[in-house]
Image (spheres, rainbow, N blue to C red):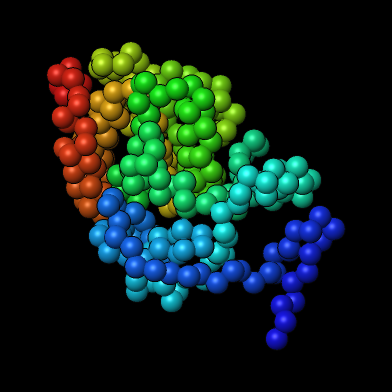
Length: 268
């Protein structure tokens, strides 16, 4: 039976089009990944689509009913950007990139160490994004765009960025949901700032079950670790017992990735 979908005047297929079939193959993941179907963590063996690069558990491959969108090449991307019909999620803030155009290839490079960007899901709803202080400005701007595409693709506009580095106009331009909490690198922040930051994180996460926070920093990862450690302490005081696993995941992230790089003042 032929597909009922049709193309509009721009040549773009409508929403009723059947997706390209996923082609899954076994894959070993070097880092923890979130399954594109059940959103639970994948560790070690899993599967990945050869077409759209989406990761998932082997047991979830039969349930993968989301669209399979092949990565765009440069020419296709240029045509898409010029098209007046380009699809932008209705909930996405003005200026954000198209969530439907994101490819998991770039995310794999980021999370598997093939990029200068260090992106880690500390928990399912708390994400760390770090950039080295030595990264070139052009590379930094490109990495910000790629991370924004990924976040919009996975979370729509349900994420809030907590920027720990110097304020940047391009961050606000990519996503209007940016909150700045900045202090000098390699130093400890004022106590009232940390209290305010923890309250903001907790308020955002509790305002909707799909909300996620992104802790973004450039340079030393000690600032990220400090925020994670402080929020762990804050949530131990204020949160419910349901968040025990999240607290454990944050503690493991802090001890494994941040503690060796932090300064004595940050540890205190």
